[in-house]
Amino acid sequence: MSRPLAHPNSEDITVAGILHALADPVRLAIVSELLKAEAGLNCTQMTDRLEVDMPKSTCSQHYRILRESGLIVSERKGVELTSRVRLRELETRFPGLLQSILKAHEQETTKTRRRGRGG
Image (cartoon, rainbow, N blue to C red; front, side, top):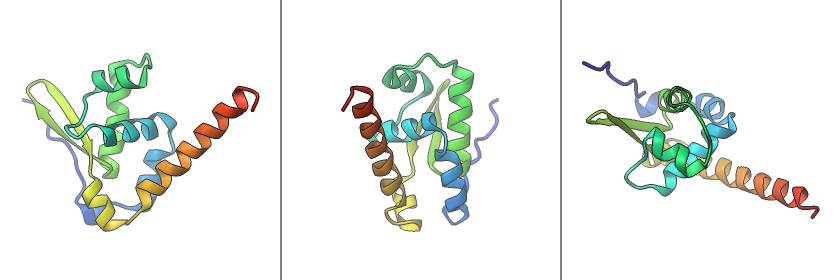
């Protein structure tokens, strides 16, 4: 039998926890991709989308940090663990926070890409 997954109650989610979880660029990319997938994604699907070669254990560790911070909710479907962003709960608790962080990240990424091309 698999052990239960830890998901904090929405009132226990903190800004510090969210910022800590999103301080890692891979986790930031995971959240960004999860927002695009209504039904959620598992680790294998995520590494395919991000086009990164990441061991499943590393991906699982990223998902655990995101889950324990309250950013995502994960559910078992057979042997698979599918996760999605807790957008409704996050928007209720911290309106605009996640979207602001993701928008700023996208702007930084775009700026860095331009510099890399000599622009």
